[in-house]
Length: 74
Image 1 (cartoon, rainbow, N blue to C red):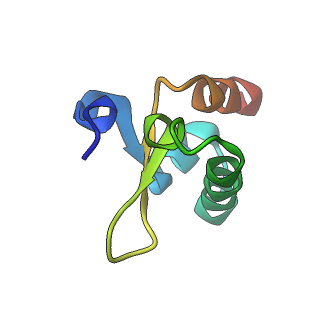
Image 2: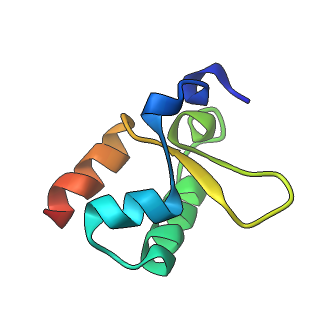
Image 3: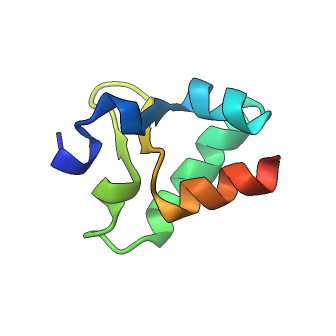
């Protein structure tokens, strides 16, 4: 896994991100997938990483997009 997502204190799964944002997990998953596709390929690992073999995502809590998303959700 990319070093930027290796520190588990900085990584959330979709369910935890949804809980912190006060939103439904499907809504958050769709937001992550949309933004992942918009980012340049070299920026993607720093934002989120799709887990191999399932539909889960690990999201970097300290990425500016995620921080902004959480701030807007409050």
